[in-house]
Amino acid sequence: MAGLSVVAGLAVVAALLAGCSSLGPGSEEATDATTRFFESLAEGDGTAACALLNESAREAVEEQTDARCADGVLTLGLDPDARPDGTEVYSRAAFVRTGPTAVFLTPGDDGWLIRAAGCEPVADAPFDCALDGS
Amino acid sequence: MSAVKRFLRDNSLSLFFGAIFVAALIGQSFAGLAAYNDTQVAEGLREVGYWRFVTSSDFAVDVAENWQSEYLQFFLYIWATVWLIQRGSPESKKPGSEGPESDEQQKVGRFAEADSPRSAAADGLRRVLFSHSLLIAMGSIFVLSWLAQSVTGVIAYNEEQLTNLEAPVDWLGYVVSADFWNRTLQNWQSEFLAVGSMAALSIYLRERGSSESKKVGDPHAQSDTE
View 1: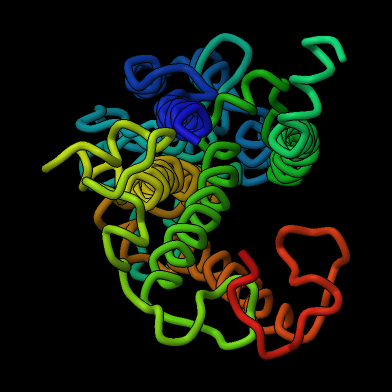
View 2: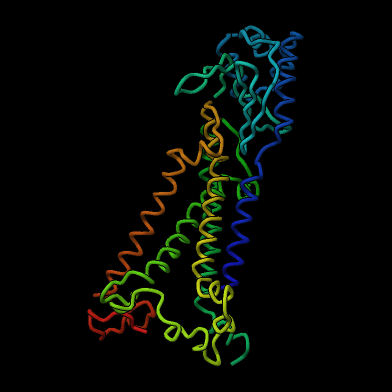
């Protein structure tokens, strides 16, 4: 019984540690990707901004603006001065606050990619996003 | 009989359950991975590999929520069978013997026998701890598993929140959430039903040769087959 208890106890600790592990990149990378996205918008570099979007988000930009992503992303009304002021990572999803709005990210091949940006909170409902690739 | 065969025979019950536990856990990991990746694809997100999934909070919360309920079940059963009886159940003591029983009945202190564990003969805290060691072990694993469920659960829950473009919650917000209590209570109710029905059904039903059953010819009213 003592042996069983030790094994079970260790397994619980392993489960706790697993809970702390993440399936995606870290929070610094999420903050950095968000910063680079808005800096690209501020510089008018739509190509660089679109490189930081996941496939769904790029398609959403093109459908929403009826233009290629590099042009359309500059016309969505996203605030180019927005900067991260808080990042939370939960497994394969990241949430970055950018003042009154927020950015949602998902892992790509080489780090985080943006799924949605310019998202404003709505009471008891999903965020309302200027760029929505969900 | 060789030493290996003797070991296998003497521990066959533990080894059997250990083996099917590992097999079921491996099966759960593959089924869980497939279900997780189905959701990822449906959301337009990338699939994950096996190792990444089994070290994730999504897998850990599903494991921990079942563990805590199983250990709670045995914790309660061990405690309840000290103080409560079910007439006719082999899982129960005889009516009238409720409580922790005398030192003589429990073979502790000066009533300890030559082959009793040394902690049974000891005085003070050592004997008290040993007298409740099974309950302490089960209770500790229950609490740790439940804590693990809450820690891994908040991560898995927030991942889902973010996938749906909703705001994450903190740990305190999660442990009072419907998701946490739904996961918890759906496991508790099934464990309580299984234990209660075992205590009741074993009054009238038998499994020949099982230590969990009365002998086939024992009367229905007989409790405490030991």
